[in-house]
Image 1 (cartoon, rainbow, N blue to C red):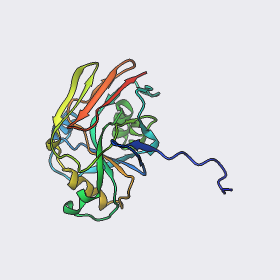
Image 2 (tube, helix red, strand yellow):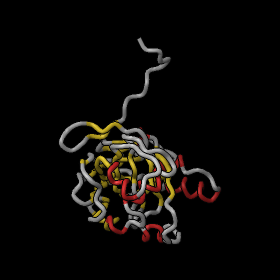
Image 3 (tube, rainbow, N blue to C red):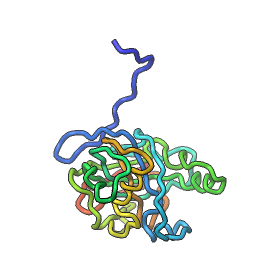
Image 4 (cartoon, helix red, strand yellow):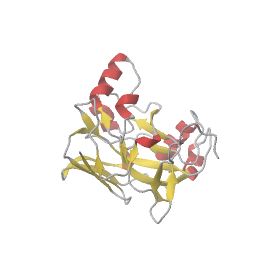
Length: 224
């Protein structure tokens, strides 16, 4: 008999290519990690230290139908490579960082851009712009090292909206992990969304979104 006063929340998992489930602990996201995206958002793409924000782990969704969120008229897509951490560590060097990666996946950072713009102007947190329900569609995790090069793209209703290469990231996978590990101790089960290339834009109900990165399992969902 447990001492829980309410039922504990279910474990959030992501399927693994080849079998098994990856249990999720935390979700970290890197902001403005592609120069062209930084420019399109009105920022200088100089190689300044990366910054991070978070999403709750239950923002992840594997559904083929994703509900359009409330409180927004400007929902945007952001295709990303997602790193899955398999071994923990703190204050890691870039040379040590990739040894912590279990595998990688394709994810989409859905963003309530209108709420984010208001938060930015007011100097407020982005939580409600980034961390809402089903704001992190994700595909299966492919075990193995994380790719540092290869095409990453997103289509809406068959039209290419985002197209880039993973080698265009301002901070490499190893550098992202290293920087983050100097801010928090990474643990098995952590996911890191590594940033998005240029071309982010609005999606609405009825739109079909297809995303891919290198040879990883593609992602596909429709907004309802």
